[in-house]
Length: 247
Figure: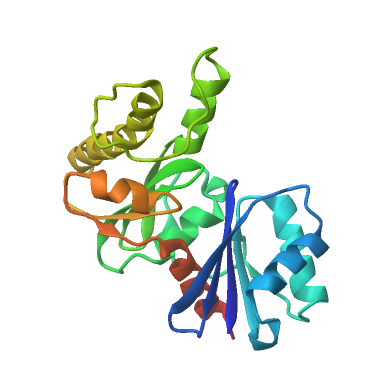
């Protein structure tokens, strides 16, 4: 089995693959101060390491990358594939500074269908809108994610409470918690609708829309339009990159 890691600033999404599909997924909190041995014990409780033959990592948190590489080499005896310079991805990047494009964005783009224009909306710590046309990243929009928005609200106001991310029954709330929940759920859905409209106008063509990331299952039902929900898209792209490099 191939062990896949998508390391974000809030969560580590873990996948197990037989080489063709992602069979199982798990999540851990991203904790930069956690030791490699602690991550190893967490992983050991979830995964049978005897089944692992390969490891692939797409990460935007270098300090966690180091610990996962350490676990892979020293505990599993496997040199992992880490998405970065020199790795074949099948993705072209047409931006001003291609090396600034994160491994998660590359993996998302790698999972899109060749020959299609696609907008991937990755709902993580930040919300990334990745426009991909024929496997080429042509532009990205980055906005604050739901968790960041909540922390900003709570941290900069005296009377607003910390809240759980839940979808209220109505857009117009009648108590503080529901009002805030509406803002960070319906508000994000409306943001997606508005940016999709503007991006379509800017590129002058239609495209497929895919929602992925940790909060995609929460936001997708609120989106008023055609889209595909694929929470495992980044892991699928990472698997595709691994298969391109496995020789």
